[in-house]
Amino acid sequence: MVDMKEIKDSLPDEDDANDPDFAHVDKAEMLKALGQLGNNAGLIGALQHKLDDLVGMSSGFVESLHWKVRARVNALSEAQGEHDELYGKFLEEKRELEERYAKLYAPLYAKRAAIVKGEKDVDAKPEDGDDADEEAPKGIPDFWLCALRNHEVLGEQITEKDEGALKHLVDITSRSLTKEDFAKDEDDEEEDDEEEEEPIGFALEFHFEPNDYFEDAVLSKKYFMADMDDPILEHSEGTDIAWKQGKNLTVKVLRKKPKKGAPKNAKPITKTEKTESFFNFFSPPEVPDEEAELDPEEVEQLQEAMEMDYEIGAIIKDKIIPNAVEWFTGEANEDEDDEDYSDEDDEDDE
Image (tube, helix red, strand yellow):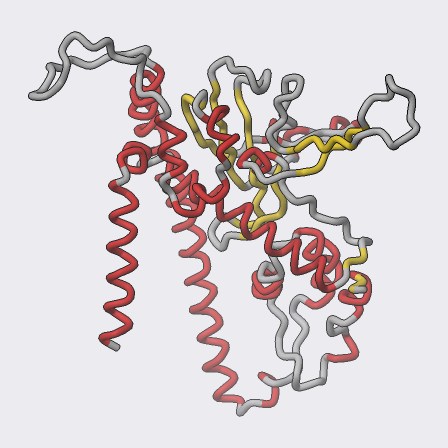
């Protein structure tokens, strides 16, 4: 079993200060490295206190250099500090630019949603071969189902049973997280709201018309990030879907006949079992707390599950939502195929 306490204890401490294997410890770099561990916030949280004690610890390597070389290294450190300050401003301006353009995109996305739902129509004339008397369906049927299904990764998540529910999907939107997205307990409510920082991350919202599968009008998925620029995922949360009776697509019902000798009116024994479904996307993997013990296989499974969970969310946010019509028509898939061929050609050239 892998004990997270043992992992913390394995980190260098003050006794290692003179060990050449441990050079100056930079907290940002350590956290970035920890992000490689499946972006597991439980692991990162478990090691946080240990890291705080290590910041600034030196092995004595720099001190052992020639005094003139030390001065040059210090000059480089000062230049690095200026660079980091500029980079911080760049990230801040980048976020402001993204927010600005998100507001400019919003009316275009609203127009798209209105046309897909059939709330807004366009002028059109039949072309050669079209039946001018044929009644047109409302909006664009199966728009989002087709867009999702045409992406290779997302298409693998959609089962035949899912399609019936996804036919009722009329829009997908994304937004940045706000303080309201934090689930608060009694202790949190006592804290001053002004001291709370804005969470880092994004939410995806799937808008459905009334259907026979669930009561929810909107299913949401929230990604809480430690860093959006790296990115490092802390955890994700999804809607607890209010399935209608007998319509849960994420489970299958197994029935076993009563044993011989059972009363004639004995009912079959039933049990439910989890099954593959796109809607499992709204039940993300749970991140264990820092006291949890996981064996290597469980760690690997959790890492893979979190990576896939984030990958699907990022695809929907960065590819499907901005370019939905191209995914609906299949043009986006052709563009991705062209990029794959280009990458192969570049490798051949090398």
